[in-house]
Length: 243
Length: 155
Image 1 (cartoon, each protein chain N blue to C red):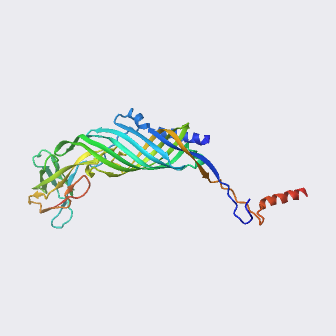
Image 2 (cartoon, each protein chain N blue to C red):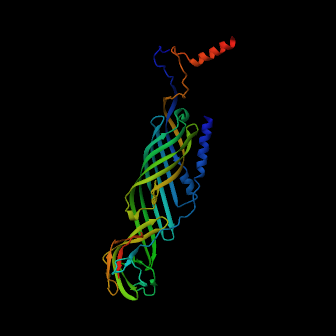
């Protein structure tokens, strides 16, 4: 017991949180490929927990894109890498190392080839046909991804992420910007949006003890002796009833 | 905790519905041609003025006119030949014929996924006759699909 005048010690609760390495596969890309053969997206990532809130993120993937309409056709394919940090916004006593709801900030690098095999343009003077040969390019982009992941079976999670991406550099000239960048999406937009659906296998590698804040309780008035006035009032009340 | 788990699974499942692909094709609403935008001005006042009539056609394209005795045209849109490094036009203002010729370089420009490619140009100083035309001034040598004045024709 603390001596009179000293601050009262606040009891601190704690939870044991397992830190994990998660290896995940994106499953929407291959599934959608069966409905639209013009775009194939394959993506996987690995995260490694630094603590109960932060994880390191490394992602990689491959895209093959094919677009054609009445006046041109376009092909792009290549691979991409992403790296960054994920933040779990759930409290540790809720997350328990099994649930994740948060945000990730990733830097992306895309290496790809693009080509316009045929294009046609019509005006007053007639029709002109041309093409653009295959060209290799780099693209850099930033990605902010938010979503949910839940461990539905032991060490097995599912989840989804909504991503917003901003293209920050493209090696192509401003007149001939590709309409699609692997890992980023369609190039004509200032921002692109994406929805990914993941399954992951989780490998626990360490357990840490995390202090959790106690639930806030109403402060009770204490008299000079440190006794609770409310308790005293109840006792007086009881005496009164007894008399 | 089970309640939390169910809640998260529910959100996860609901999000999967959004994976359904959109099949709506995009449409092109942009200008897809790069014209020389030529503003017509009266030499005497220096102000923009539509001639009583204007006719315009490419040299060698007599059968196909761009403007035919058109009224209220204060800015003429002149299409260049992307397959050539130069082209000429006959311009008839208020019944008087003149010719105007352009030399230029041409390059491809991607407009958008929906519209595809167009040809942009960089023009040199145009050569023109002076039957009714007083002078031609180049304001912007880059000919794009954007709505910006390129030359001024004083008549």
